[in-house]
Image (tube, rainbow over all chains, first blue to last red; front, side, top):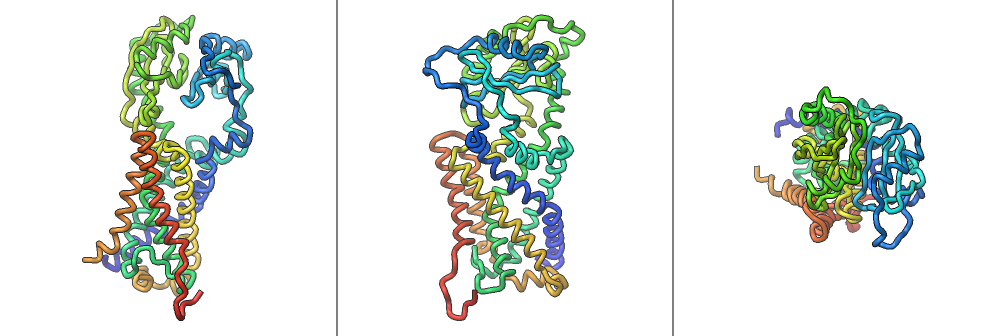
Length: 377
Length: 63
């Protein structure tokens, strides 16, 4: 590489890193407990579980579950109903003053007795809620998300420029050399280079998928305004649904329309994931991929008949495949541990990088990057 | 430039191992999760090994 090129890439690496380092440290640190979200919520006692019952206990009619919830919260309407594959004994319900209410209430009900369970703490309790918001939106909603997405983009720039600089800075060293006999600055430069290159592909994937996740709200809006709107068109101008069809029969109908799949999520008419005339039913399979990629089925909310079913558009598929690759929650405890270790290694790369900049020293800063590369290697 | 091999062989192998680790757990459970843990485990071990190992004391070597 020519000296001029080294200087240019060095400039790109320095500034893209400096702008993002503080936020990346925040994301790495808050991401660590989020890897173990489930375990921490459980350990803090913030998890609501259905009581033990014999495995063959029959399941209650879902309509009874909904009736119990609405009786407990008079004046509210159903917004969403969902069930986690891991916890088939619990129905999660979201109720609000209207289908589009921002002031919604998450509830849990026992799927066998149709009785309400204690209300779960919001977002897994105060600590996990703090970690979540600092990691996802900095308490600034969509703007916070998009800002962190931009930081993610700069991280990708920092990673790519770091790779470009890897060769000139390590060309005279065997792979993985950390020169302990030299000054701390040289030692930390070597550490930065070796851990940076080892974690590179993981960091690229987690960074890129994290950035894609920040666009989730926007992508959903696109889907609502295009494909979902298209499916709703024939119903435009019709009077609103007066009496909702049975949810239990809607679920049974949807399951017949998607053999081998389970209902994971139901959006009630008028909410963001349904139309004013339909239940939006999202069906999940049980393979690692199909359990992430729901098949949407629209069920007429008045008659309970399946209107249409479609596959998700490519951009929502990309979003939903991005999520596990960012969370590291798709390969059991071993993968979670590796996610945590690689996260810690990334923190070391960030800290050593920051140290190299702080300790660049006047003499060092005066030298062009290509000279430092020659001296370093 | 015949420096390509010495510089990039290890990073490319680690990159491929990372991709295998990330994708295989997505493909299936059981054996696929094990393959994923093995591939990513090697990557994490390599990182840990080179960053944590201390050189054997050599003559004239400092701190």
